[in-house]
Length: 385
Image (cartoon, rainbow, N blue to C red):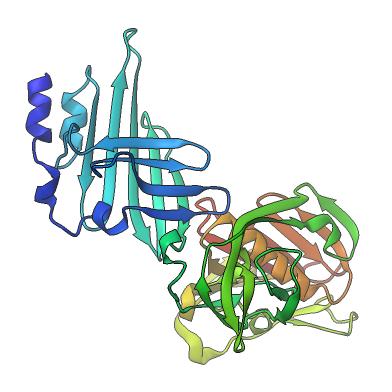
């Protein structure tokens, strides 16, 4: 059986070419807010042994001198090696798959498969143990330590509804040089520098008559970076920066100063049709009344679904892409701060969904995260009796 296994694993790594996934991203670091992944970290002076380690756990170890590597599909390897232990990889230009199958003297076995690929400038890790449900983790690349002395000149935007503090030094006690407004542009020139954990306290952020907050705080683990803002050099917290210009909520909502409006303080606005890419329309019948659904797709992967139930209620759902669970809380916090011009009648915050209302018969807004944590849904309901 061991000989048969080697037939599948005999192709050496150098046959995979020079521009493989390992060669492209070796010695890089990635973070998702809760931990940092060293990918891959050299384990010896020769540079032939590597390990993938997060700040909380070990993932895998590979030795290019001892382990066998395959350019073929890994499925035949998994089928043929049912009683032995092995480690194999499939390293292509676009992805890396690492199989680790182990057995013990008592007949117990474990198969761990880690797949890595890049999606929207993030490192995606899909981990499957013994064919159980996959665990998907997405991480954003950190700037290398050895590049601190070189200007990166990377453009970012403030993703904080509250003014983001621009400091003289990379710590929370340093002098404030300026306050960066939501959506303002700056250039990051160096980092990461000083680690810092930022905690949102949702129980104290918003004015509300009735509260039901089961998820009180959320902590972002990030660091300070050196930046240039309006020609001044200083330091800013990286965890509240975005590579893309953040959502302008005034595109979707108007907060009314007249609380007697039927929408209860907030109105859903018609969108700029020049940004629309496509539109779909469907009709149906509910309780002998005509119902309809309209789906509009806009630039920047924004989709709006309008539903009318045929009688009273109309629902508008905004679907936006996000990169991580951190983004869900930051975006939700930013939206509620924008809407909290008036005191909320009801405020509900849980781990996976938020909701608000301004009045008993007025509009309500629900915010939720998708199961794969790649989208956020903002649902606006009004009408009914």
